[in-house]
Amino acid sequence: LQNLLYVTAQKNIYNSSFKNIDNTDVSLKDLKGKKLILFVCDAENPDLRQLDALDSLYRSKPEKLGIIVIPVSDFGNTSNESKLKKLFKQERSYQIQFAKVSKASKSSGNQQHELLKWVTDKEENKRFNKDITGTGEMFVVGENGKLFARLKKPVPLNGPLMKKILDQTVSDN
Image (cartoon, rainbow, N blue to C red; front, side):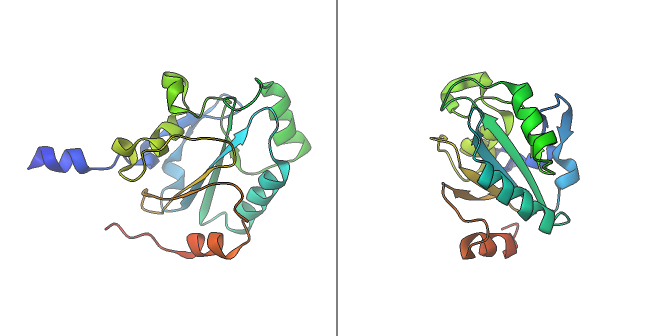
């Protein structure tokens, strides 16, 4: 019975960490108890309107929400990380977190970003087992650490669907 419980237990994303665009380790423990949005963006040509909207959403609910943008190079040309860092931190002054540029697809193997491994592997998240097929995908993790929504582009961040998702409390059941 203990083995059965172990097999069905979900790996808690809040025990994870990642390297941000400044190459600093960021622990998700500080986000425990908040909703978490993981957003996949094109590292070469990020959708600045979507990033502006995500940053605005975060600024409206910093006590209830964490947002991590993961720039990926699977779907376009390779990007210049220092150019992205300048854009995100200096030119736009975003308050949301940005991960280092990495790969999104499962076929990238150990180059796939560690947070994206969690959202694309049912053994990790106990919910979804689908690969990322393009930029603009969003994953929402509940306050309890459970993955409960996967959204494909375009999803208006100020629309009724996102409001419902952000207002919903995810139970541990």
